[in-house]
Image (spheres, rainbow, N blue to C red):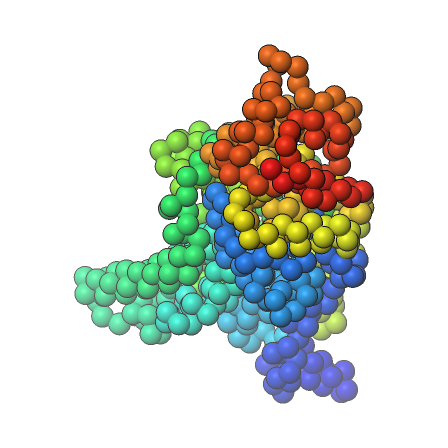
Length: 572
């Protein structure tokens, strides 16, 4: 008799016995998410900053708005405000662990609404799946923590959209609002259809009251009102980046459609990768061993089972958000597939209006599909509990980790921690302490760097986040494609395009060969380089790893301000 009693007290027995302990139900999913975060981040939780691709945190970040399209608004500003109170490296670690905790607890809350009699185990299964899958892993490995804020808060946003009320929804969308434009767009992909299609008591739909045209009219009015409320909340929370985007002179290169199209990261093609929540465009963001046939097959099988479980919930008397989440998941999957299988559609849309540019990276929008699968996993585990011993069903919580095991320990070291050399702080203090206006040009003219002190991990130029004045850097992105080709995605900022020729010449002059300025007739002359930069309002030039003598010969009249082992800072 002791065995069933013990399982019931742990919440493994559902309605068959006593109610689960409130602490287990309330805090169990969050604690599981925290534990999974610790397991996934591993060495990244050590002293220093985690720097990889777009994940760039710096000490004492300044509070300023960047140039061009506001991709990091308001996420950078929020980090700067928090870092004024707590060291920036602690802020980063708290955010990363918070992603896992928020995602797991939210998925568990949705699973609890879908399966009110299911007990704690299905909720934990949903939590584990949503906090440990290829989508989250790949987006983390490419450094898109701001997007993952929207992903983590998505379950809570879906729940709030189904329940109604602008203040509840605004609170649930706060993580996405901090994340910025892409986090909000991904969230809107789910909450708008949830508001339009929600059912149940208090919504005016799906109650069975009234007949004929009157009931249909009431349902349509209720849907329209709910969608308007959600749209207004989304728009208001998007104002920090939306206002800047409308006034920006940034341009969108349609070549990005092909560059950012989803790609196969396993043996089942692009569609199989997307269905398994992978398929990101950057092959370096794949989890080590992700293309293993056995593990890929296991993840695809889990995805198919999860989708079947979710369909069963939606077809029954499912939760109010069921049909809306299904619509959002399908819409996100279609956006992802368009870039891979019908690239002419997004290219045409971008050509018509640059505002469609964010949809170039279509794989980002399968986040609602991941949430639907998490709820589906909970449904399957709940069904298993009816025919299996409680401990066997509870073991299903570990399945997401078992089918993606190399995500653990910082994806086998791809995530780590590193401290900035002291000279970076000295340069930061010099530039930020200068009250004179003017931009800083960061060289070499390449967006991404691989510093030895960061163990060779590729990261976006830290200068883009470190200084309180505008920073000109190479926004051009060169993406390799299957078959050995390359796609060049042009810079968005016209100002960056204008200084590109001079910056490229300076990089070449100060390269490892130390060739000096280009001969007359083969490129801009030295005096023209300096004058051109001054006309663009450049006050400082920061060069990392360039030949000092050859570099300075191209900028007559420049005053060296800092000479260090790695960095050279000159003032024009």
